[in-house]
Length: 480
Image (cartoon, rainbow, N blue to C red; front, side, top):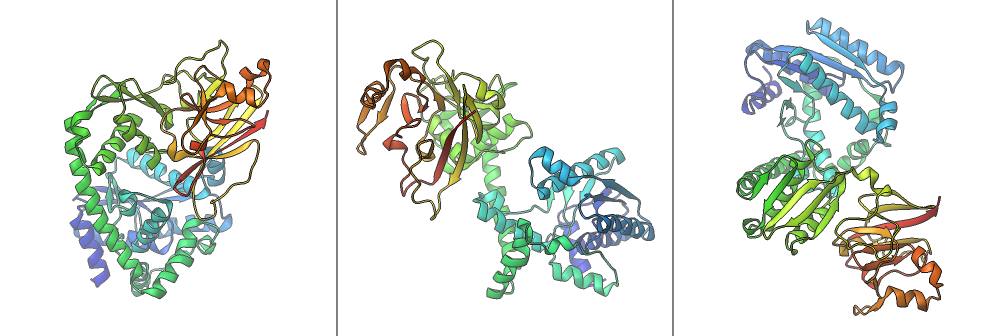
């Protein structure tokens, strides 16, 4: 047995990826990595009784070449006497229907099919062919996106039922093994097109890094292993704190704050993320950013009665003396553009007050007006913004409570001076010579009684983007 095969088999054994008599689904595209994976599983099978089933997903993207790949995998499986399940999908249609990129839609569909077939066959594991190069690409991509420690740990060798026997093997080692064993494989020409993000990383970024250090891929993958260990330690500490101060109930999660607020800041953030994940029930932390976690920490230190809304239809409320409660709002966030702002803010001063909460990026409608809302990370190219009447860029970092678009209320004010000096909204509208009968129709971007933007006019001094701003809210009003 050659050195590379032995190393991979040791990885399977060390991580207990497969146990005797288990049934494993092998995702095989026909490329070098997946063919090597299948070869390794056959080698394992010779030493340890197990059942293998090949699954090939044809994405309907590359026409005849894609069909030929599927046929090739079927023939290889037949030659190696391994059962093969072939599935066809339309990845472009899936991407369009789900709003995902072609890469994301294809990946999600593959894993859904793997899991469905695993259940149908009563299999135990799903083996996929990620290697050391994939690990380095993933770590760098997560780093660029601003990931936390979990993302910087990259791909896990074992995650629930998914195993990755090749994760500590380089692409060069894989190709050398196949060449030595005289095993052919298919080459997907789209792997050389740089329009895909991962391909840019593979074809441009990693080669440049290897010019600096030929072992760059290996070192990045090794760092990921160390970060995974650090993440595991933090998760264990989180488990202890979570069990001590969190009380999950049927419709809500209650966080007892006395012990929570005494814990290390990093553990506080981990517990908050765990609370969100528990409430979301499988949706994970989708759409939640560091800004949202920071807002939750701020809310935990606020007096009772304060409330904030978050993505995914979630709200967090300070109840009783020492509790922060996470729960789902009665209606989903997608209905936000049709609801009045009836949350933590006080009631409006006039009947018929218009308003809607800003819950996430998207389009919000009030009367005959639409507002497009998006969030930007500030960089060196966003030091200044054009003066536009109906488009504004605001410092999102400074927003702590519910932000909404509405009409005026008693007690509204603007911050009109850099030192924090305020002016009543009523007085400002009078100064701007807005007729009395039109003042109740003026639209406002508000945070509580603090007016961030008088639409069509000025923004608050406290909402202006400065050199300290990290995240920006962009809002644009358009006629319906």
